[in-house]
Image (cartoon, rainbow, N blue to C red):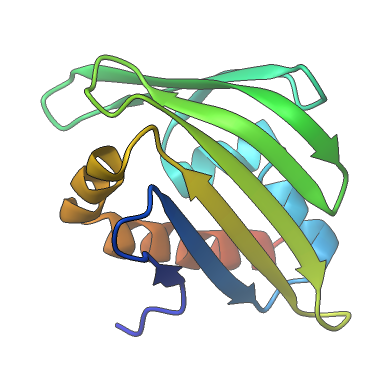
Length: 154
């Protein structure tokens, strides 16, 4: 499977640049990141809380194949509709720490758009730990699901 999502991980840096072009209008791509019903579909998680505004917060929960629940949460620091979301992200009960995520949404044409994600980790070691996981495959699969699910909303 082709990986349309590109990840730039410069050695010695505690950040990632993730870029993906979508065959979706900008408004629909943005909607995939702010509407709980859509988030649940493409992420495969339960949205417990999603207050999508500046100083808002969110809380997600997923269940692994063994029935264990895993939580994710964060605070939204910047929210500009169809343009930008800056937020923290924390996987509860893991050694990964809190990361800062900056999502920038860009219209390419009336039917296509681009997402740029700038993710900053607490340390180079934490970032490198994440990259040892099937992270690239997982984010590419998630982005593919966004395209499949949101295309049905057109």
